[in-house]
Length: 113
Image 1 (spheres, one colour):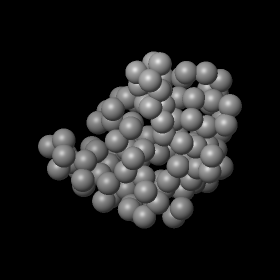
Image 2 (cartoon, rainbow, N blue to C red):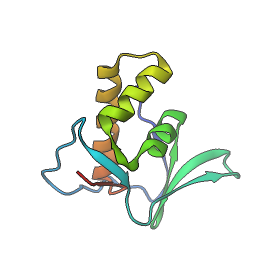
Image 3 (tube, rainbow, N blue to C red):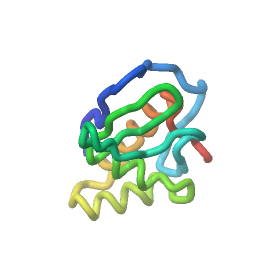
């Protein structure tokens, strides 16, 4: 589950997200308003489209984004991935939390609770 998971496609900058957001296993997140997951047939990859930017995602990043349904917490998502990938749940949760923090900082995700 470790790895960057992303590669800038165009116009990507490291914008700082709202200060003070704490991401834990109890966190529930979803894609931010205006952000969409799409297949890019020209590049042959899945991209996250946001206003004025696009971000290419690897398979693990796509799986995480698809799991962020706005109802399940990160503990539940990590448990599902741990079973699917036969990996230690605590390591999977650590990786998912890092992903959520990064994408929240980029304003691509909305933290609901």
